[in-house]
Length: 135
Image 1 (tube, rainbow, N blue to C red):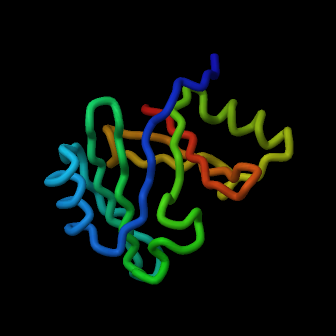
Image 2: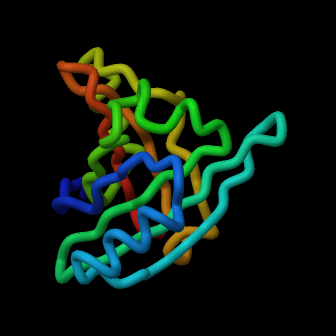
């Protein structure tokens, strides 16, 4: 059965990953939980760092093109993520309601959190929302 389970994380754009990690870790008490680098077409990449404070998880998002950090795709807050079960069913049902997604099908990312599926959609004010399912 497909269900929405609750908040997964908040994605925050950064132009300087090391500076942002230091800020959250040294000043606010966050702990580094996971890091990854996603390779993109054309030699582009995105560095990701997941930091936890209690039940709060933030994802620092550093694109190779620093001009993209903090612009478009929601400004400094890149997206909110909602953990789901049954991402394909949920995506299909939302598309049938006319909700637009960034991709036709959920993406599988085996290198994050022992495997996840994600799909991004837009809210009514243009905000990015990620649906995330752990595999």
